[in-house]
Length: 484
Image (cartoon, rainbow, N blue to C red; front, side, top):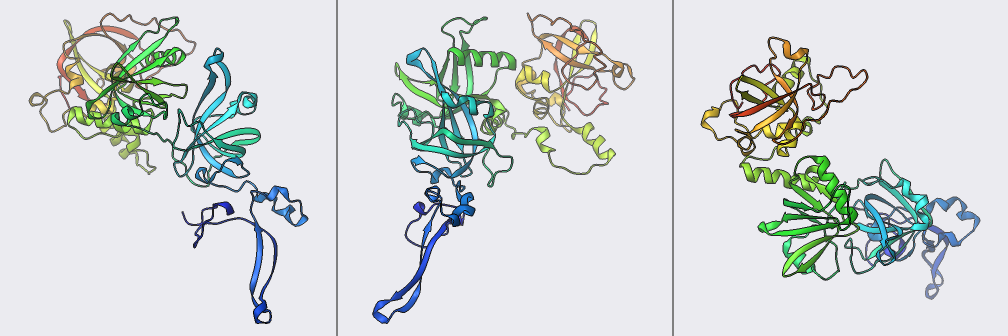
């Protein structure tokens, strides 16, 4: 961090490793009048960008670009700023006046710089037309022409005591390559005891991360009044809290859970308000609360794999695609070997009263049943050198054994070759679930890419005990129940 660009007002006594950009107003010789005017050196007067715009001298005309010098959020002070900051827009939300029937007042946001400093910012409703369409969570911006003020000390969204206000002269432009890399995410997580300390104080709005153990929703279709979603979340040391979302937020999360199709395991919730009611700790959502499930954040993904390790005793497995994200040259034989050995699907031996067959389930199907991708499920199974009869099946296999399911399968030319007598599962329906109606499309083409769509038939079958394996390659032919 040597030579960080700062303002003259940021300097302190002592040797400085910072950098400043200044205009040289004037200079003159410094002489010692007690020693017959002996020359001691040259003195000068410098001017930085904070008051540069007050001067119109011609020799400064070529220095006008010195305004908007790049600084950090921690360098800002209250007042109108002529500096520039590069920030990532973490998240933004509408600010409404609850005392005036939810009247829109503007948009609030949370900004992050390269030093992981977070600072709130606000755009008044009268300026939304200028900036709203430009706002995109996660993008990096160059911010200039803004005002800095002290924020409300209640319901604070960050550790900073300052707030950025957009003005009529504010410029908020996207940056593709920031001068210094900015982290992708940042949270202010608090543990259970810290949440207790903040409860009922209305001082801070911390962030939460934990394991979801139960969800209850009162949202109806269509939504009625008093919509509410309540989630029980296990935090550190097996302590649990209840988080509540209301009205529009409740409807949004309810719909999101319906679309996911599986029960998420990990939740990250931002800007919650801790309350103690009846001796119990509750976390209420606020207008700034954003909800992220499972692997939608890096923090949530790390917790997700720790929970997998805790439940299975196996080390966490990184997603398959991340393991092969590096760019390297492969021969055709090496690429074929990767496809044959990659554990990106699960094979199941399934039987009914007429016979037995080998069914293949890819990522989407496994995720809907067990909240894990196919390659994650496959890594929980026994290895190639282990006799499956001498090992215990993992929990997600035991949960399926003996149950009846309706399998929607896809049958194509691939299934009628001598070496590929298996069926690709495109959808699994539990007991009581209704089969979807067929969709008719024009020129749909033949889909044989192993994904989860375009099912061609429904088969009611019962899972055999132990009948689950991870794929050993496209040519796996055994109908015998196994784990490989």
